Amino acid sequence: MILIDTNVMIDYFHSRESELAAKIDSLPIALCGVVRTEIIHGARSDEEIDNYLKAFKTFDNLANDDYDWEGTGFVLQTLRSNGIQIPLADALIAFTAMKYDIPLWTRDNHFKFVQGYYPELKLYEE
Image (cartoon, rainbow, N blue to C red; front, top):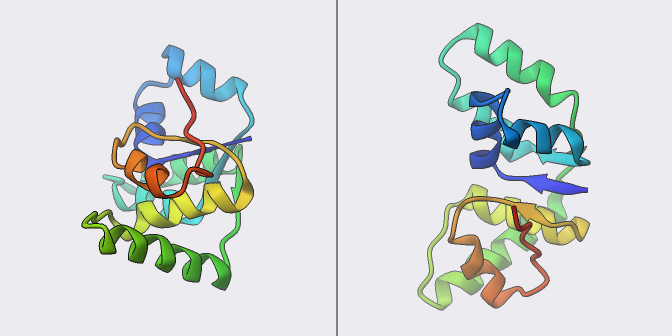
């Protein structure tokens, strides 16, 4: 299973006939709540939201709980104390991938900063 970051999902939704879409459709893919939230937040119409909600059902869901919020806080604190700032949502995505011990497919380079302090974060190579 592979956890997909928001930026990859956006590319997926905008290029349904591409090699990226074919690859995602052929792999065991998971989403977490914050990725779904970010996708819906960026929707431009109710129709687009409906399409996203239908598509979300085709992917596995990785649930988050209180443990994840505390773990995300530790990740953010570790990075901040080393002079690195990343968005809360990205820290939660990274922590979720580590919790479930699955690779994260992202196109954001700042996840490499997380991996520098948390080598257990596996990043999926396209």
